[in-house]
Length: 195
Image (cartoon, rainbow, N blue to C red; front, side, top):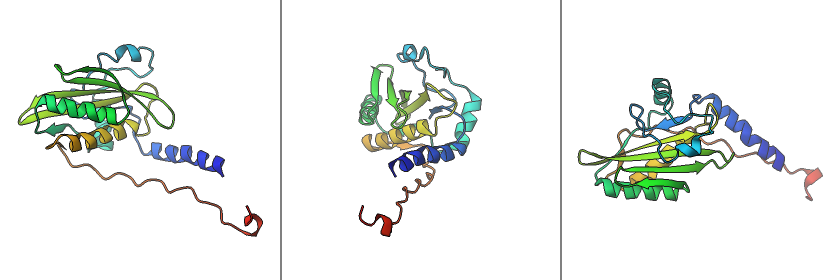
């Protein structure tokens, strides 16, 4: 029974992966994605480059994840920076570097199922009436990420929107696909009624 449940998870992931684009770099700013600085040495041996893939990745992301957009907050950059750092920590990310003066936070997130390390960079800049927060999440390995980077960006956005009053994505979020059904239990019959 346990083996069947454990095998079902990769099958569900495989089915979900077929519907997702083969991208592993998700950002709220596809025109000018936040750049890594402190994390670059940690990515030195990574098969996935730290540089953004440009319009190819941007168009695939916009088609698959149209809800991932910049976060605009009606707060000063320092307050927005604190909210972003609090959100990153609450998500369990390992903070690699923070630079409040430049408005940059860099972190590493570890995927729960496979234990892969993915890297995150957050940029906070002044914007009319407050601040703009952009985030980028990039896998170190693989051509596709099974939607992990998009889920990470969405989770961060939801927390920051709750932490910084007046925060909201510039577009409403798109509906998410339904969760897979739980594994089925075998019926209890006369042969296993006493177990």
